[in-house]
Length: 321
Image (spheres, rainbow, N blue to C red):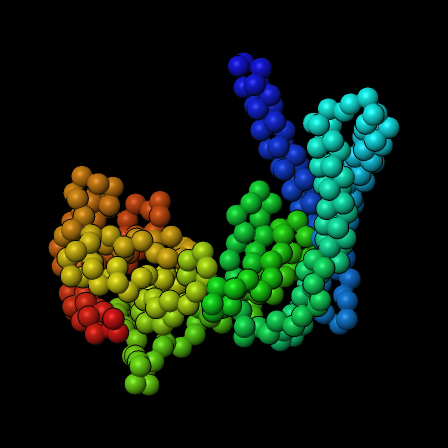
């Protein structure tokens, strides 16, 4: 048992160290390149060119070739001794190694071909063995992070379909991230409010310390467009689910968590338990007020009082359901 625990522990530590080492070395190399003023090579006049690094696909190819050679030797050995009887497990191992090696070679080939070219108003995407295709910036409804040890991003359309993805270790990743922030993420954050079903625009709400509007934005793992209430606080945009905000002002919920970064909490002092962390942060506020709290802050960032609280509640009540 202790041997098993020790082996698993060593494997976990090795995986952690390798991941951190590769990530740190990659970032250090990119930082040195930028300090020297070196630019990424541009292909076909692209503003940004993204490709996987050479070591990524070369490493997989080398391991795959080793698997093919070992699998072939095992297969040859089992074939020459088949008359004397061969353990079925050896045949299975030989087949698995051969298939894994062939699959690894195909994978390395597809990784070598993969690239993303960011043009002025569109991207040319070639991923794996697929043909290169054009992705217009207008097709991108959401740019979402990839949750793995190396990071990355993926772009999805309004139906949640993935348009392309980029690994965080890829060369040109930081430049592509900045490109998408400038041309996709920020314009959507300042987009105009949505229209009612009859085509009449929904007027924004404006208060003393912040403002709000009702629009649609990509939310959730699938990145589908959903109605949201956006609170504009200084330079931040806090997205809240309309149904949850409606429950807050109706007295059916005490706190609403934001659906986007920065992480924030919209709360009613009258409905938050006084002994909770939020209750201590909201202590002394009028019961009819509404407050916005940022994560890990001791005091509310914004408090809607008196007429602001009344008009905001009325505005939320009049939004489409």
